[in-house]
Image 1 (cartoon, rainbow, N blue to C red):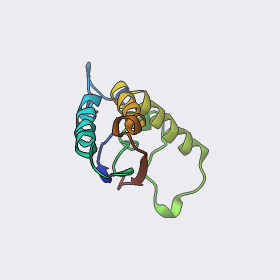
Image 2 (image 1 turned 120 degrees about the horizontal axis):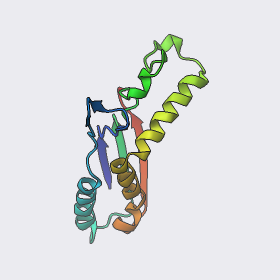
Image 3 (image 1 turned 180 degrees about the vertical axis):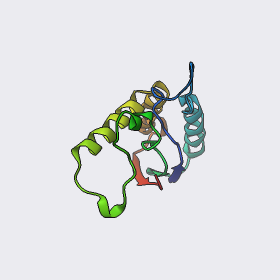
Length: 132
């Protein structure tokens, strides 16, 4: 079975503030849990041997993080300017770590890891980066 999920837009919430208001655009993991439970019910008696999940498009909101505003380093460079850059790589990893620490995202990522048990069959996850 092939499941394609796109535009999940997982984001870090540490830097997402409007004044004193914190903003968290990540969906609660219960949304994903309900979706995957429906699929588990659907394939319960089916001849599906494996499940392939394709994460397509904007999965991680790396470029919209406020962490880009701490200095002059920015996520946007022309393709002709792309080169090995430890500072840029460190920033991207810092943002990915912040995204993974965000409780709603962390719970959802754990749910993805538990899918083989839920589906009672092997699950392979594939990632196709999006336009960001």
